Image (cartoon, rainbow, N blue to C red; front, side, top):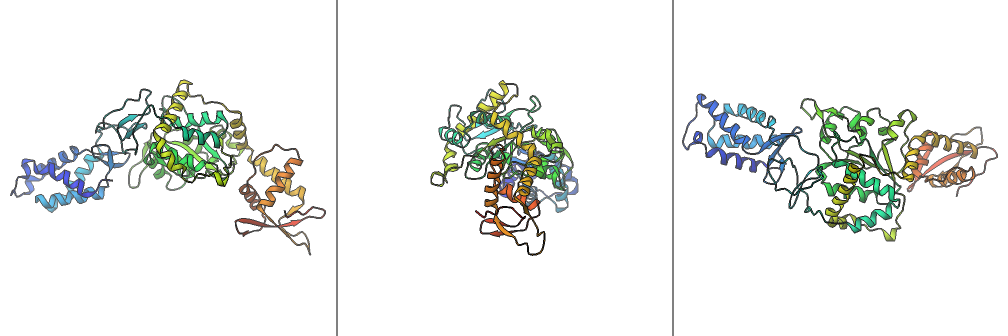
Length: 463
């Protein structure tokens, strides 16, 4: 972020070279227009612009954020040093503010324009030419690594192959990440990604690596519900405009069942506004990604949304003695190669006309999204068959106490006996299901324990 002293130094340096501010000159009211014109020229010549409601200033490499309050301090300090009458100061600020807000020096930023240590590359183009930094290019940060079109990422590939064994899933994930750099106006991309897994399976490492590769300023982390509902939805939308990726640590069921979520995933233009600003059209929405410990439950009335969600199964639990706590840091050395991995997915998706690689496992995972009501019914049937009740049915009826893990094991065994398809059952799913059914819970260490009343003739198994 540009500091106030930097703004003052550059502004003052330009002004003192103008004849208007010759040493010893005393100003009168008749000099107002002349002074205003000088300050306006100094501002516009100082690389100060407004993009997406944010003031920015060219620093020789990229357009850095410039806070209006710091600009105002620099302006008033300059006025004081040059002897500009105090009564002019407010008008000068308003004129300069209008000039900055109305500047169009770099046009609308390309979503794929990235600044590296050795130059600028527009990753949204197939021909990725390395360019010299220039104030004519819409770049707003610099990445901590150099661009290298020949770089590879063997450690990242080995990691991904372990946590996501299905090759079709890996190819689809690669294409989905590459879709960040495709123009949605030319190619309709209506997909989001969901990394499904319980823990110690690489979801967080993947998320942090993707953010590091494209730059944290190109990412946001809003729960999608923040972008579709609530008083601050318009403000949140204005903040994600132009971002490449919105990655949520935990996607909620509520978010996926929102009626506006479909248009958000499809990249359809929205209306948003920053605080104290007017409404504007949000032109460039990011790719929506997120993690989930459990498969979210999409109701059948929102089945169209399920078709837009890719579920990647991160279910390979890495043994504790094999977990590399420093893997994210090690992968930083492969950022140039990982970017090429993303761009390879972009090019393949473009070659295929926007069609993603198909995977039987992912089709099966996607089918579970709209089976939430069926899963609730299945768990409810399990409770009935076991004779479990949430409350006493008569005098002298005492509860037995069961942990969520015991209930999970019982449910898995019951499904096997009933011949149901084998699938991952998490304690979070059991906890939510028991809470919905009205069972009284209390915590015991890291476990939830439930008061379960067992009907006559039922078998009690406390594990």
